[in-house]
Image (cartoon, rainbow, N blue to C red; front, side, top):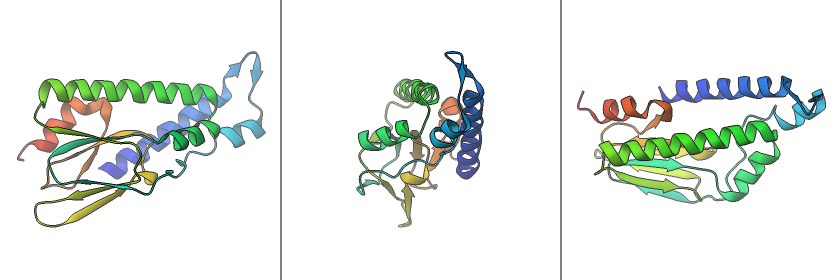
Length: 168
């Protein structure tokens, strides 16, 4: 499911890049060279850190790029796409945090910013490692120590979090 969401987001991101690249800005179209240089790169630049956050309790983990990584993303993304994406992430994270605070106040919230890896320790001793270099720039995982961690589509936080933490 997380892989489908990741692929779906990358497809939407690529589509947004193409749409924004085709728009006229200040009466000029982006040239093919500019589009290729600025927007064809959809893969997230690597983190500036190799640190790991260990999660061994039920939690919601928000991740964001570190400041240098964010700068690299900005350099390879056209300004309208970058601003739009960052605004969208900011809104989605704020909405998800408000939802958790109101409906899941006992759930630990962890912020992962200057790290590359998330290490989830399940009750049965299994270890699940997530490389944030292979994820979207921003996002949220939930973890209950029994199931594998789940990358949440923050637009659907109201349904995905209760579904994940249900006993079914």
